[in-house]
Length: 272
Length: 341
Image 1 (cartoon, rainbow over the protein chains, first blue to last red):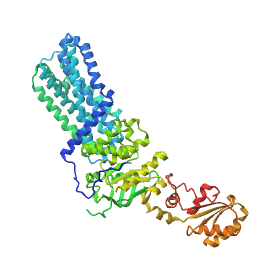
Image 2: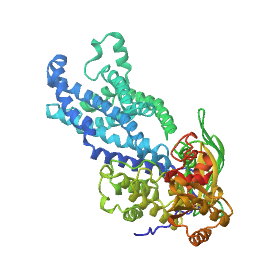
Image 3: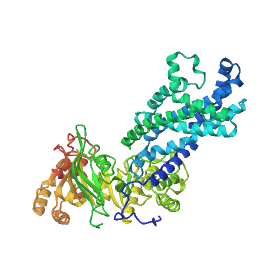
Image 4: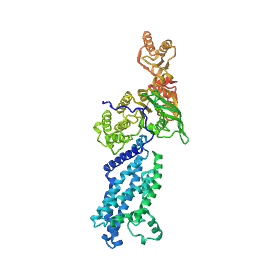
């Protein structure tokens, strides 16, 4: 048997009484690394941002294209940014569900006794999931281009749209993260999240113009932050333009963060 | 800081869950370099106590310090001095053994090189080198437990909490775990462990606190606890049942107390003041021509201590199971319980 060469930590040394902001960032990134390792090892957990965008893009374009815009190719500029919003929303739901699953695992007990920032085990996966939103957004655009979508915004517009999609995903994820921190089981979190995710996604301008909706639905669709996000995505990708919708979208997302981030952090801390 | 400050000090610790007082005014002092065993049956409040000291549960009443740092006010400092290994392995299923150790080291700002070196050493020490790059899902229960302990040691904390470290392990793995714990102490670690196994406390702990229904009912070294409730006994099985009365008379004369008789088993149990009295008894019996079939000298076991202190054995939750109460002690297994009475 080999003896350990490093000395025991000295209990008489002066130790920091709280975690510094720098340490918090480093711990968050370490836990983000852990989350990406998990993604790599459980590839089926990535289906929602890999296979699903491919499938949904081809499917929705084909199903709705003729009915809504007269032809698939005319529909693509509407549906592709809409689908970016939709796949990112789906990926957000998984963020909350996986957080819940994670908190039930033994390794979380260890996180609790480690001298780390209480927020790091929550922030780590949220940072890592930005990678998932990035994959989802990129694949949706790529699939669109394969079936004939030619974004007028050019490379810059598309890249800007993808990055904005990632930001939107991260902001919206706070809603589902909150569900993750208050739900008792992963299944429960999944069910609640889908109940919120579907109206937010479908009562919006993601798939169809809002003009034909009954007035009460339309009223919701027009204030729905997801609608503004999708309009902003369209303006960026199709025209390469930053419009007022981007401003409204950022404002809406900021409100979501302002409400759900403190709620999540509080209920998460109670469990840490 | 003063070297005499104990590793753990708790005063009047109370934790209630609704009606239940899970921990009820417990005082505790664990000196540096000690292995302190908290012994008690399931549900006695051992784990709750450990969780309080590890900053995982809030303190309802009383106070607790780790190396002089208040657990309530300086949880972050306490966490830096502590390694905790629970009843269930708390490692990441998705990572390999090495990655797990690297993760916990990196989270605590151990630089990459030191982390890698310490991880390799720990894996070797815990006989896990072969499995270093295998995912945990392929690990056996014992391997997980060892990795879990390794994970607690990666930052070399001076104090380790072990919550029932060998519950559910097979005898061989259990022995390995004991060996590891002894090594930790040899390296200067202080260990606070809970267990429901009396032999584990007996084998490992310098000092033992017996906990029952959230209360500390006794504390001392293993020997102190044993001598507090009884002495050694000499158990004799005779060849001839008819010689029991004369043998009893001889023994009574020599030790000054009457032995307990179990004629059905041709047995007498002689209480000893000192162990060497056993020799006197045996020699005298031979001089009297009393034939002896078998001989056994026993110290009281911690089992008996526990029974005497709490009125029930370690694996029963309520006081209903007074195992040795009956006077019908004809079988071997119950005979030694008579000593307690």
